[in-house]
Image 1 (cartoon, one colour):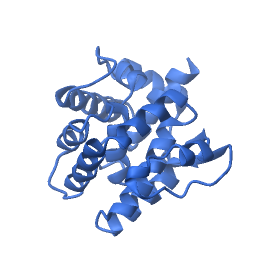
Image 2 (cartoon, helix red, strand yellow; image 1 turned 120 degrees about the vertical axis):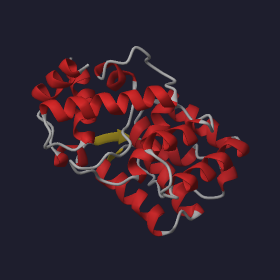
Image 3 (tube, helix red, strand yellow; image 1 turned 120 degrees about the horizontal axis):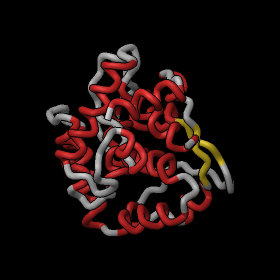
Image 4 (cartoon, helix red, strand yellow; image 1 turned 180 degrees about the vertical axis):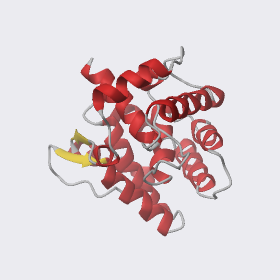
Length: 217
C-alpha cells in the first residue's frame, strides 16, 4: 500500500546513513550467559549489563562470514550479533532464540541453510524460504539474510527485514509467520512504493522508514 509507504518516507526522511547508524540497546551479559553450550562457541559478547549495536556493526559480522566462506565460528558470531540487534532487550525474544539454538537439529539446519544462502544461487524469496524452513521465526530469519546480503544501494534488490509493523505498512494483511509468497509480496510492495515516491533511496531505507514511522505513531 504505497500511501502508507509515502507517509513513512515523508515523516522519517530516511537516508542510507541513518539506516547504517540505527542503534539498538541490549544486554551483552544476558546473551552471553544464556548462549547455548551445544554450539561450542560463544559470540564475543562483553560482560556489560547494557551496550548498543548498530546495523553497520552487524553488517561487519556478516562480512566476516562471507570472507570466511561461511566458516562455522564466524556464522555463530554473526548469529549472536544479528539476534542481539533484532531481539534487543526483549527477554521473551531472547529466550525463544536461545531455545531454538539449543535444539541441535534446528541449529545445524540453520547453519546449513545459511551456507545455502551464501551460495549466491538463491533469490531473496528463496533465501527467506530456506531459513524459515528451519523453524526460525520469520522476523529473525529475514534479518539474517538481510545482513548477509550486505549494505544496500538504490539499484540493489536484496532481502529486507520483515516484522508486523513493516508488513502492515507495506499493505500485508498477515502480521506474522509470513509464507515465502507473502514475503515476496512484501518486497514487491516496498519496491513499488520506493520507485514511486523516492527512487533515489535503497530499499532498506524504506523498510527502516516503515518501522520508524510505526514507532513514532
